[in-house]
Length: 299
Image (tube, rainbow, N blue to C red; front, side, top):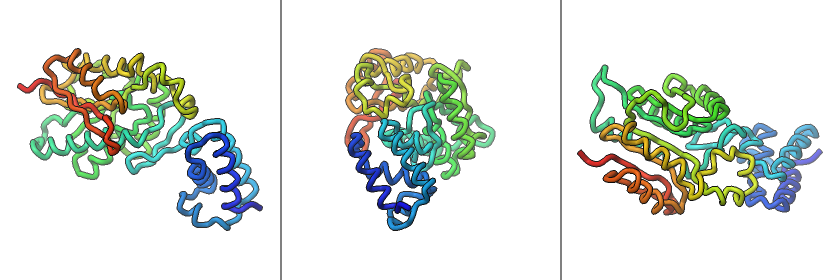
């Protein structure tokens, strides 16, 4: 009967040979998923024996990773913003850099509600998460606002053009017990209800088309339409920009995630599509452009 350490060494060698950038981490996560243990406990019990059935199941998962499938899809979950989300090939895997989008959105909502509390009976602050995919951004926002006691003052709509992605989002919305606070709707960008939103949040496809085939093999398992942003990566974002004047409130804010090399490009796109509007680009922890803050002209 193999031990934890022996299986990890075997898997790490195979994964390193397959080109994995994090072979040991991948092995630990996959073994943990089979043993139903977190990584810390897996590493801490290297001498523990592993039953033949579990070892076989682990090797099968390693086979899938060697073929390039993302660890998140093999495990069926991904951690994002301190939460565990169900993930599979129906939607893009949530990325750590997208946590900045959530942080900025939550901070802005909290600041506005604190500055101008809504009297009882008044309309809630309206937020829409465009291109929700797995629902990670909308769910993370809802939970963060719930912890601050502010969720009742906000309505969140989450849209996606993919019915498959929305099916996955339903699982995460229900699993995190925020189904009463998030309305999921199939739409190409914004809902067709004509509602003015106080905040529009979006993590839309922004990878240039000619770059998509060069991404790590794991990306080939994700929906291409969730990655491909057209010739310069900003095609879908531009389609959303032209909708802002008719769908964003006069004092509203749009927060759009962008690629690390698209800071100047998105500023130029806003200037072209929305003359007089303000656009500031927020950097992530690595100092790279990550989120565009777009606001209507000052009254």
